[in-house]
Amino acid sequence: MVTSGDAQQPQQAWRYCGSQIKLWREEAGVSRQELANEAGYDYEYVKSMECGRRRPTLGLLRAADQLCAAKGKLLAAQEFLKPEPFPARSQEFVAIEKDAIAVHSYQPLLIPGLLQTEEYARELISGSCPPLDDETVEERVAARLRRQEALTLRSGVVFSFAIYEAALRAMVGDREVMYRQFQHMLKVGQLRNVPIQVLPVGRASGVAHRAS
Image 1 (cartoon, rainbow, N blue to C red):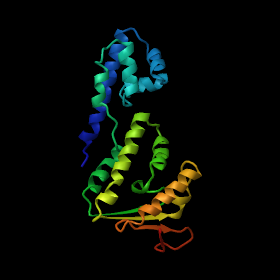
Image 2 (cartoon, rainbow, N blue to C red):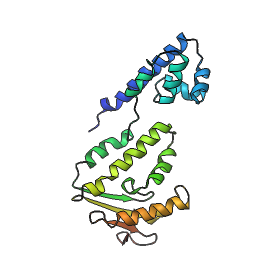
Image 3 (cartoon, rainbow, N blue to C red):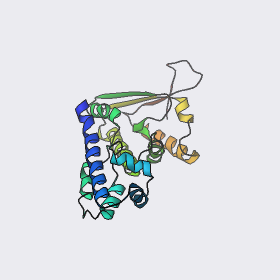
Image 4 (tube, rainbow, N blue to C red):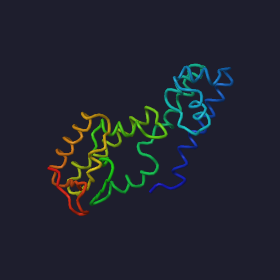
């Protein structure tokens, strides 16, 4: 279970590392705009990282370490700033899911995460608002794919999905992305422990078709 204290830990690390970047930068006589230019970010984005509102990225740490001649002292902070594989709102659910003996999901708007292809997941995650940095996007895509391994590794657990037809019609990426997503769902739906049903638009609730 994720407690409020656990959730605060990343923000404390962000604030501390951000303040260290600012201190090193000011001592070296480097302006925030110069650091932003070197890292390839805009001024306000760097300000947010220095103030601890956003996680200082590896790109910023590298740029700051080089500009401020920190000799690796700033770059060493990357071990404490690794992106969270799941958003805070999902961490408790994911932890519970690992020990579940049955997982039942209904999704009205999007394909469930356990059934998403890598490219479908990347389209969704990279389109998050507020925007995520590239490191966080890649970590969360990888974490979503690792989570899907349970479908085959835990064959004694039932993973049941009911999906409203609108979720299949909502375009994520282009038509090719959606085509490969549908093909993937048809393949996964052949697993004995993964029933997938689609609730058609215009049908009464409870009337569904098995994906096959």
